[in-house]
Image (cartoon, rainbow, N blue to C red; front, side):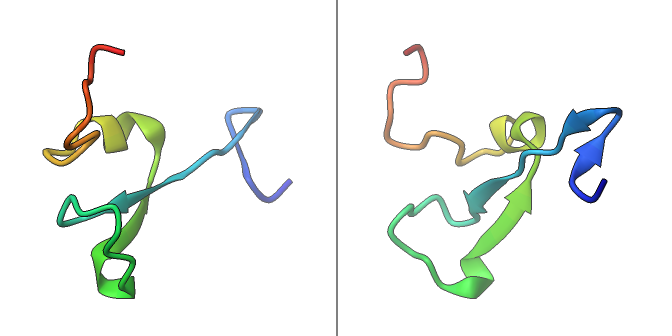
Length: 51
């Protein structure tokens, strides 16, 4: 029952803190839930967010 939240599978996304998706240094990465990730300033940086 490890990765479960309110009876549903818990899915986390990796956020690149500085917005550079090619910068995979440990200090630039953090796990966020999809809702929190979508609220970050750098979410989908450089992509058309309407797709």
